[in-house]
Picture 1 (cartoon, helix red, strand yellow):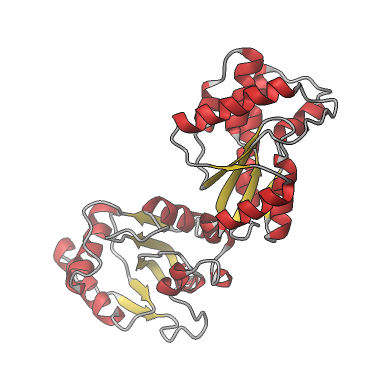
Picture 2 (cartoon, helix red, strand yellow):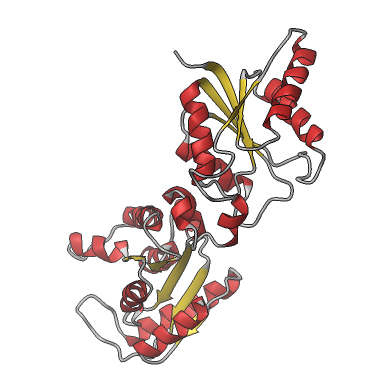
Length: 332
């Protein structure tokens, strides 16, 4: 038997850090049903509503999560406006009242009192809301949203993996055959102590004895993105991706003259940075590649496609060491 039937936690959660998670977990442990409300006006950089909802649902799948991004009070509005807004969300959107509100703030008692008043007024029945104060001194988890937001990488220890992953930049490395992109991805990951994602299409090509079917194209794009999502949870600051579904789109059109609509959509997958490897290495035939002319064709296609999609990129030229130096400089 838990202490309360229903409990409420409200916050910007920008970002959701381990202090927030301690607070929410206390509510989950004490309540049969925990309601989590999140809103922020303005939205804070890197912590948009969609991300906050993803974080909260991933970390607290048993809670009822409501992330609101329209018609919300400004962060600087009077506390009474926010309290009444939250009470209205409970009654009108969540169709509930709550027995307890959990905070780590000194305003918690007043918040609970106003919730009780609003619930009584809206339902016509006397309603009292308890305030449960959790680690107001921040001694258990010494972090604030402002601190975590100022430099998520420096404060990674206060963020769960799923939250920190949202601040990892995906670096897409493109290039024609024998342009050094795989070597570059691996070396950059080693130099910067992070993860990289090899090209799944090549792996499948080898596994199938050099034969790829039209149906394999969407599978390649989908698996590539799945592996990037998994690797992002282990990465530090950057995740280096040896190719993207954009490359698979090129091969699908080149080999079959068409592309699955699902692959077309996957080719729009967002990356924070693009590096394009120039075809100025000596072409090395390893038994799996076409020829120099095909490499040039690929390079021209990337140039046209990146331009058409209005995707900013950095062209890397010269020796491997020069490319590494230039890439690291671009990454800051």
